Amino acid sequence: MAVSLPALVLASLSSAARADSLPTPEPAAHSGQSALYSSGVQVSPGAARPPAATALSWMVTDLRTGKVLAARDAHRPLPPASTLKTLFALTVLPKFPPNEVHRVAETDITGLQPGSSMVGVKEGTRYTVADLWRGVFLASGNDAVHTLAMMNGGLPATIKEMQDTARRIGLRDTVVKSADGYDTPGQHSSAYDLSVIARAGMENPEFRRFASTRTARFPASGGSGAFGIQNTNRLLVGSHGVAQYPGLLGVKNGYTTQAGNTLVTAAQRNGRTLLVTVMNPQSGQPNDAYNETRSLLDWGFATSPTATPVSVLPGVRPAHPSAPAATPAPAGHTPPVAASQTSHISVSGWTAFIFAGGVAAAALAGALLVARRRARRQGGPA
Image (cartoon, rainbow, N blue to C red):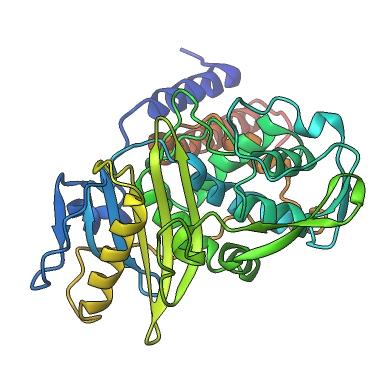
């Protein structure tokens, strides 16, 4: 029975759609990380037991090597609060030069949710991009996040790009519903994913600089002077009864009603840098996220760097795709097509999508070859 070329193509695409819906096997790159999917505390063999921590999820990682020294429920999906701003920064920070000046429009700061943390961005005032990033990292300003997101094409586009970045760098537990980490139904991340984000971010000198800045001056309304802002990471600055941690490099803290306290912290000692992520401590004590992070950092630095790790994070992956040589993107900008092409793929289904695309392409090529052979036999063009 003769089968038309369109029918063959349609059948191929149908097969691709079915393949996209199939369960995705665990990629080989993650096969050595099964311990991190186990519940409870996982620790390096032979290492001392980590200090008791009430956080629902936490992880201690060597920033340079990616060795995971210990973890508790590392892949447990939990609300991230403002630690999600690290993914926002990883996505948007490379796009605008720090000295670029932006005059804030009314639409830049509309739609902020009740109770949002603010740095004090005002309509009609001019800010450099660096000013806005200091507002994000130091004051955790959702108004600064929204302004940068509007510069980046709007909140929906930015959220899609953040999700695309999450897939690109290998996150497995992160679903983005807001740019600033505000409690939103369906939004979650994990200690594992936040550690991967921070590790990728610390590869960027500007990310490191903003994450470690303790104090700064922020432009006042209308450009009439400036006022002081201080980093809300109490381990970095030493405030609210929390002593400054020696060698702290910062990163990001957060709090919301649903997330509780969350904290991602990097610190350096004797040429070694550790990364600790804690999510939602349950002790009910003041500063519990900071105190538990301090204890985990002390334990990590006391653990031998040659200890067998629980797991090893994959190498840091680029957060932004390379622009095609034939159609280079404007300097500092990611082509919007990259986000739109993958924004509909579930985090667990990206491998199936790539496989399905290959199936469709192979079937299409086969159909074209059959058509060409039939055309030769029938005296048509070769």
